[in-house]
Amino acid sequence: MKKALVVTNDRNVGAALWRLLKVLGFEVVTSNHEEALATFLTEDPSHVLILEYSEIGEKLEEHNIGRRTYDDIKKSASPGTRIIRCGLENYHYDDYLRLPFEIGELKRLLL
Amino acid sequence: MIVLLIEDQEEELERAKEVLRNFGFKTAVATNLYDALRLLKQLERKIVGIVTDLHFPQGYEPGRWNVIPPELNDPTKPCGFAIVAEATKRGIPVVVCSNIDHHFAEYAKITIQALEALHPIQKIPFIMDSKDWQSAAQALGKLLSER
Picture 1 (spheres, rainbow over the protein chains, first blue to last red):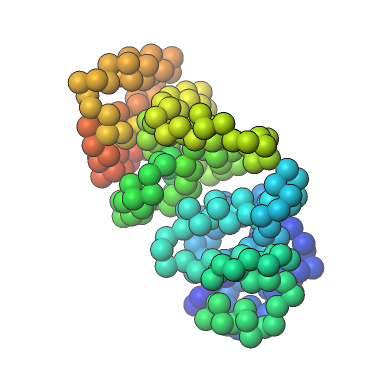
Picture 2 (tube, helix red, strand yellow):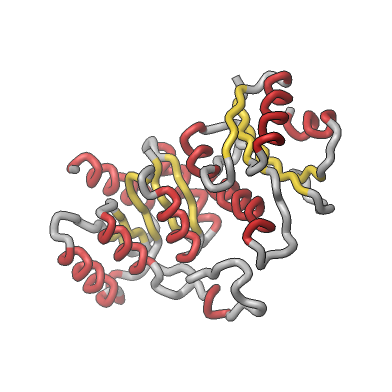
């Protein structure tokens, strides 16, 4: 079974994505950013969804926490792991999903 | 079993990750001293050992500098010594893996021996001449089996 890790500091968003990914057939684990790398290494997910990604406001910890989590997990992951970053800004990365997104867009990146 | 791996060259990093994976280790990866110390603090209770290169950049805290001083990205800094010191202080098994030529590595050997002497129970394997991750992984496995 495919396993997804959802990383967010927002419990409500985490719970909503947990339900959505369950419907899409994933086993789902959630984590906040502080515990994300440890959870990633322990759970060994095939897919990772990282929320709160941003490249602006680097001086504010809360504004770059998703980027740091993404960098940590990306470096530690094996090549087959699919990692998706999500945020509110507009970036043109293949693995980036701008919020709010359609479920179909998430499915396209995940499946 | 989670290992903290510190290596700044991408190609070597991928090789090291693969070798360690084949030995049954999961790798938390840092490419500079700043990130390595951050991950060490964050994962300390989960890390069973450390495999580190000897020379890599110091790195920096995001947002601390308006203009990044080039010294912080200098890959020739022997930051591995700081990792070895932190590991011995915390009692975490550590292996150094470097392509430093053993003919010109006296300064490194003496420093690592001195750190070893501070904690005589802890041996610090030092792989030189090439980044032989296989030997590094074997050395770490041996250290763990002896504990």
